[in-house]
View 1 (cartoon, one colour):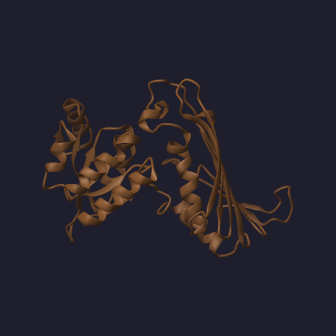
View 2 (cartoon, helix red, strand yellow):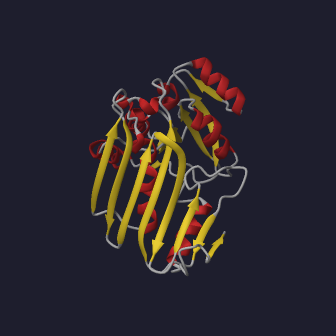
View 3 (cartoon, one colour):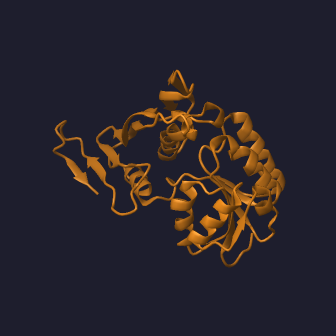
Length: 282
């Protein structure tokens, strides 16, 4: 990768997460240039390229990976294609930013890491939490001891979707609540605790038609506390994360899909009573 100037990115696919959120965001950055986009449908790639001002459009992913100008690849393909195409990108000498979940199994992740190490490239999972101001501020408050010692994290993330054609409801494509949205409370709990879980308990309810998990709950034991979360693809749209300490509590509003047009809130409870008398908002 070049030491100076902008990194030239290629995008695999014209998924809405790419065309509506990630690409526009990267184009505003000082260190990124979206140089090419690929789709199995060349017209779709050309339409996206024209709309977003991208110089090159390819009708296959292989063509994009063969482009020597491309230094890094963003992979927003369906879940079951994350590892195969990230491996092909790494084998082509490209750095990779892959959408979550980066893999569907431990074995897949280990294979991806082996290719990364052998090819000497960087591979990252596209979670925004490690750089988002809302999450950085929450971690800062907890590290400062604003709620005492962190003991428990409680999270919920849900939406309602029973569209049989939606990729999130296709089990063979890696669909289901845990892979689509349960990965958020898992990742953020690891981020805030600054550690890996030592044991996990879980419960899954599957959709009788799709066979995907439509309701999943889990308890993660960490060295210094516990994280509990519920996620669902068939419940009321909702997302919250709470951090419970020995003297106080923090609650995050819209922790995973922060809106671009207004600030989100962090509620800080000093624990003086159960009525919320000591809550302040940032």
